[in-house]
Image: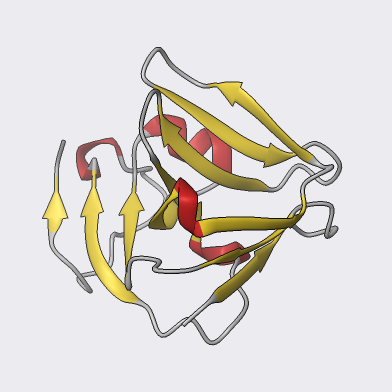
Length: 127
């Protein structure tokens, strides 16, 4: 199944072949600051992501270990990539429905915000 995704304004649009069929929820402070809540993402190899529009795509190095892709027009947070990795974390919320995906795990749960309860829909990994 080829999934389609895009930012809020459409300046970044892409298709994904062979996306992981699960969603990981990251509760670390960096993901919460970047996305406004916890980060829900799937994963695919870079070679399996094809852009039909990328004029809005920009990247910033968010730590010594990773960079994040976003739309410079609407500000949508779209991608996470460890430095040197050949895969991308892809925001599940930017994908067109239906995705057919299911929860896999919650990570960095020890860093979760104090304003929500982590659902018990998947295993919790504190760090």
